[in-house]
Image (tube, rainbow, N blue to C red; front, side, top):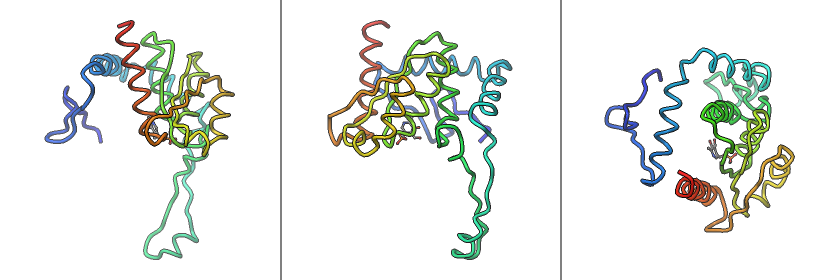
Length: 188
Ligand SMILES: Cc1ncc(COP(=O)(O)O)c(C=O)c1O
């Protein structure tokens, strides 16, 4: 876990990065910015303070006694990431990404969501840091997960319906990446 990939994204023979050529410079810019700030004490302190005071980490570990007894042979513990603010583990990486985006001078976070938990976490991180937020979501998922659509909107995000393909997460990912590409072409 402590080893980082090489500049091509490889861990030995495995890994790599497979991106549309127009998105590669965007990924490279983000990588360079991340490598620059990841050991920056003020970045680490800001993120750690947000984890503690905004997210409510560290989340507790709970011994699921009845589940352990029912399955037999193992003591099962649950790391209660569902108790984090916004109700999932997603807020952990969304906060780091939002802090990085702000330090890079970006004004808008663009993301995608399926069940809506990632969208809610990104919308919360954007609202916290005063960034705009646009979330792509398949129309099928928007109907299924309507409460999370409302939460994203309450947090100030624009939720963009995606009606291509199966209208679910994969199509939302494609739409978000396509949008990023169009912005890159138009504004560099
Ligand atoms: C970047 C990103 N998008 C989407 C998802 C899917 O989650 P959700 O169904 O809550 O949108 C995840 C899950 O961790 C994610 O990390």
